[in-house]
Image (cartoon, rainbow, N blue to C red; front, side):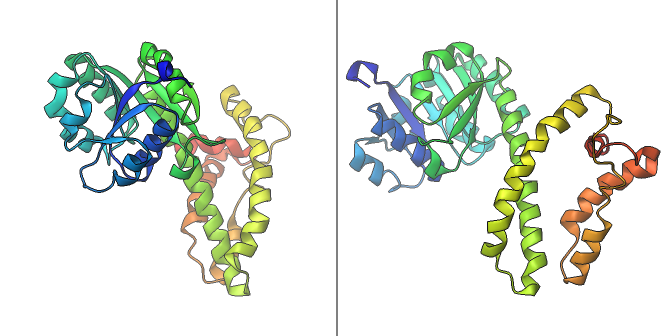
Length: 288
């Protein structure tokens, strides 16, 4: 990147993720101003070449691109509402975790204030930012996305979902839902084998390749769900998927059945409704 390619950008919020975002911008040669409510968090970034601002207002003055990575939706309004007039004519990229409705509300707020707005959902942990595997999802202003796409690429792979500002958040939270349920399943399994003297690390060595291999089933599940026909041949039936044996084994090991019990309830609801011969993806009808 040459000096002519650099962007003047302000980053509001220097938690673990905000600091990682700002660090990547500084290292990429962008003129970066940083602000955090708690003093001292900018010291490491200043040593790398960033400029620390005493207030959020000082941070946004003169920089036409503002990145917000704050605690929550309420924090975004708390910090930015008093600055709406100063932000008019500038661009806001909000990477704070929000719900789809909150992202849409903030987009409407920005439009009323004359601020170009892009919402983002970060599919990475802080140490991944700027490295392979980091991905950030965006929705909102197409003009903002395309204008700043080179800068966004500093953080990771950028994917744009359209003008609906809530879509990036929706994808973000839906993907996280899958992740957390998978993690909970791993933790449940680790708890099951622990009484037998198996460490979580030993269990992880077997669980990681197994779970990775099983993600290959997702495309088939998706085809069935999109087609709406749960009788397609080749599927594992709901009756065969009954998790009673896992529940029994968990109880025998002295382990709570909450995690597996949740999935079992989704399965049993469809079996009890007469769909036991149909495929496992039918549990989406229990969720719906």
